[in-house]
Length: 154
Length: 154
DNA sequence: ATAAATAGCAGAATTAAATCCGTTTTGGAG
DNA sequence: CTCCAAAACGGATTTAATTCTGCTATTTAT
Image (cartoon, rainbow over all chains, first blue to last red; front, side, top):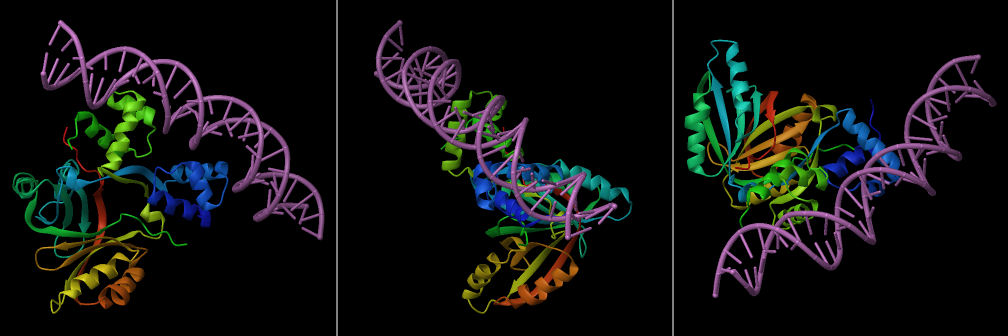
C-alpha cells in the first residue's frame, strides 16, 4: 500500500492534534469531510495509525524524575532475555525498554516521582529481575526536546 | 490544585484512547457527560493534559531504525550548551534530546529510515553541530516496550 | 484510442455527540 | 438543622460524524 501526499498530510496533522474534528482535518488537508474520514479509517485499519493518546504532564503527576538505565544481562541462558522482557513490560514506571547493540543489553526509560522512588525502582525491582548482572543510570537534568512526532516526508 | 479519583481516572482513560467520545469517557469514570467534559476542559486548561496525538507506525513510514546517541560537548564555553540545544530541536529525525548527568552530556533519541540515513544524520548533521566533541551510538534491535503511558496512581 | 470498471470525491440526509441551561443533589460550615 | 456553595444531572439545542447517492477521474483491456 502506498501513501499519497494527502495521507501523509493527515498523519502529520493528527500527530499535532489527535483530537481534531474530522471537518477541521478535512479543511486542512484540502478535502471534503467524507473522503477525509474514509482515509483516516483506512490509515487506522492498515496500521499506519496505531492509536491515539492524551499527552499528560509528568511533572504534575508524581513522575517528575526521568531516568535512563542501561541494563546488562548474564548471557548464560537464552531464556534470560525472554524472562527479562516479560518482567520489565509489567513495570508501570518503565515507559520504554529497548534491546540495543553495543556495550550493554537493554536501555530502559523510566519516570518516577523522585530520587527515593528511583532508588527503590532500581534496587528493589530492576536489579532483582532475572538475569540482570549490572546497570548504569543517567538522570535527566533537562528535557530539551520530547516531541514524539515522527517526521512524515512530504 | 488537587486531583481527585475521577480526575485521575480521566487521565488514565485518555492516555489509553485520546479520541474517546465524551459520553463513553463519562460512562467509564462514572459520571454524566456534562461534568465529565468540564473536568476534561479543566485538566487541559490547568496543564495536566498538554495535548493529544495520533500514534503512527514508524516502521511503515521510512523511520524503521531507532537509535540512541550519546553526545559529548566541549565545555569551553557556556554558550555551547545553548547552541547545541537550539540546533538539535530543529532536527526532525530527533524525537527526544535530554541533558543528562554522567559520562556524557546529551542523550538523543532519533528515528531514521535505515543505516544509510543514520550515517548521514550522524556524520553530516549531529557531529557538525556546534561544540560536539564526541558521540556513541546504540542501535535498537528490538523495541520491547514503548508505551509512553504515564502511571497515574489510583 | 476508447470503453468499461474501479476507486475516489462532493453534497445531502441521517444519526450521534458536544454544548448549553435550568434544576437538583451533595458536602461542609455555622 | 439549615443554609450556602460547588458539583452533577437531564433535557434541549447546536454542531459534528456517519451514511447514502450520484458524479468524476483514473486505470486497464480490447
